[in-house]
Image (tube, rainbow, N blue to C red; front, side):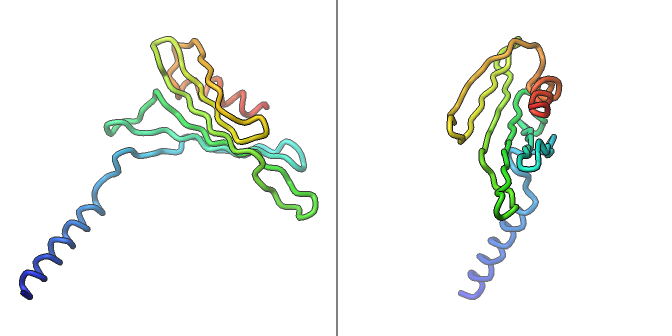
Amino acid sequence: MNKSVFMMLSVLFMVFIGFQFAEPAAAVKIVDHGTIQYSACEKITWKAYQYQKNGKINNNFIKIYINYWTKNPKTKKYYIEIHEIDTIAKVTKNSVKITDWNDGVDGGTTVNYAKTKLTAVQYYWRIFRHELTKS
């Protein structure tokens, strides 16, 4: 009985150690983040994530999390007023799909297509990020 318990614990320990060294199936990499202060009471923060597919970085999909912050005049602390999640995905050779979800007053999901030969990541860096930082 003691040998079987010892053997079972040894096998469980080895399996646990094996899981510690295993790589995740879909790794996520932050490719951009930032904060823009628009006024004394408003700011925007964002983080852009790129995913791996089959062990390689996927340039055809990027996800951006954006938070719109407002300062409470009484407490002088910022709180998140609106959450927004944008995804840019390459759908055909000549177009990308831009999905925008937010939980604001007029929130919901909107889907737009842009005609371009750029990958999703190139579209983010050359077009989307500039629109985000100037708004």
